[in-house]
Length: 402
Ligand SMILES: Cc1cc2nc3c(=O)[nH]c(=O)nc-3n(C[C@H](O)[C@H](O)[C@H](O)COP(=O)(O)OP(=O)(O)OC[C@H]3O[C@@H](n4cnc5c(N)ncnc54)[C@H](O)[C@@H]3O)c2cc1C
Image (cartoon, rainbow, N blue to C red; front, side, top):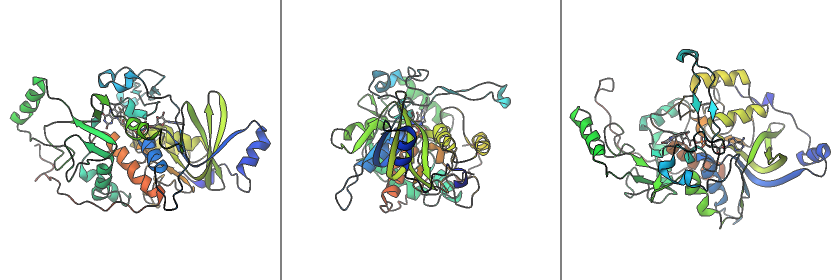
């Protein structure tokens, strides 16, 4: 389990003075209210919501968004059909590989992850799937208090503008644009018809009343262009909100902790080591591989325990999650509590796919964006959106082939 005991103890020292003493006047130190590490699916949402928040006293939050990769301003990301271009391009992808997997003939698996504004939502296949409503009810049973489907649905809706308009399940005024794919190709119809003829059910909307069945997929595509998290949440606010500072090619290398409180981040930009101090909080949104790694680099947590944890909870392919999972305070395998706060460390949260209590029965981009919407309210201290109770289809016999 991650614990404050293993932190670098910088208590009784002012971090700015300490840095200046050790590295002289050239120290490159900036100060902000919030530091968000990683501008992927989660980080883009968090940075937007913190920077655009209208506080009662009319002051705005100064937000620093650090991104290890470059800008996402390239046709390779914008053009949906170009999706294979970036996966193995080290400019935009971390190009991770697993260790040899003994249960798969010691094969090494390729693990692409976005290293660019928008993170993995800039590389992904753009399928919009929320998972099954009961997955979220299971999260709550697993110790993630306040993360049932009724709690999460308002945030799915808040994030979304669906091409077909809003209803009990869909949103109609959020930043993330979701469209129905075009059905020009007769093979699409043939495929769905074949499913129905084989005895499977039809679903009108797999993110609505009934997940199960054959039907249309929703896509994060707007007018033929990929709607990654940064196109949805960052680009539209950049010119208006000067209180949001984005630093690309900036790799966080350590969370700086004083006593048991996170006070800033050390990062590398173009070979220069820089320091950013957070007056309010540090929020890690580096994704399932990098957020736990950054915790370890910061002396938070135990490498052996993390390794076991990754082995037993993360998934291969494109959807690793649960590597710094959310749970109740007496759950020894939990890294963050249900408000996404790192257990044992003040002013430090993790918000990304790593905190999922368990894998969902769907792809992860939409759920991560929903989680970040919900976490942003927690960080800002505003009450959660009211629960939404809607009907959900239940098979009469879940164990039977349908
Ligand atoms: C090839 C592929 C296809 C996929 N297809 C789909 C799909 O069709 N539908 C779907 O729903 N999901 C899909 N996914 C999964 C989904 O996109 C991810 O689960 C989701 O984007 C993860 O969001 P995140 O915020 O946890 O991390 P990410 O979006 O990966 O964001 C992490 C960000 O943090 C940055 N970062 C990391 N470490 C640091 C550091 N130390 N300092 C600064 N910055 C840092 C990274 O560069 C990155 O930009 C796919 C994923 C991949 C890779």
